[in-house]
Every structure is written in C-alpha cells, then in structure tokens.
Length: 68
Image 1: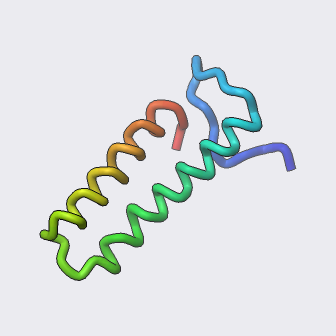
Image 2 (image 1 turned 90 degrees about the vertical axis):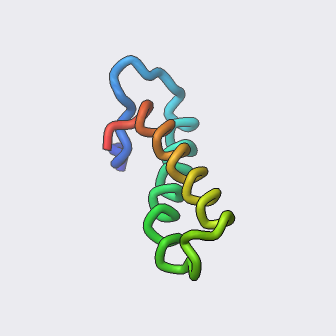
C-alpha cells in the first residue's frame, strides 16, 4: 500500500520517509485535540490552557504542510 492518507501541499518537498514520520505526529496531535477536552477536569486551569495552546499551534503548523 503506497498511498498515504496525508498528502503534502503543493510546493512542500520532503523525503517520503520523513513525511510519514511527520504525519504520525500530525495524527497524534489531532487525536490529542479530541481526547484532551474529554479528560481535563478543569478546562480553565493553566495546564489545560497550555496543553490546548500547544496542540493548536502544532496543528496549525502541520496544516501549512499537509492537506486534510
């Protein structure tokens, strides 16, 4: 199976092996963005806000490289 679910945007050049590893990180961040709100007891806590910010920034960066 050579096709991946994660397609690089036009103009983004990356070796296929590296693109696959970065896509794994993208999958983890997308999973965290769904999972974290379900487990955080106090969404107003500084830790929860920080984690959400980190995940959102990571997703934003990856959205510049991948089509999803």
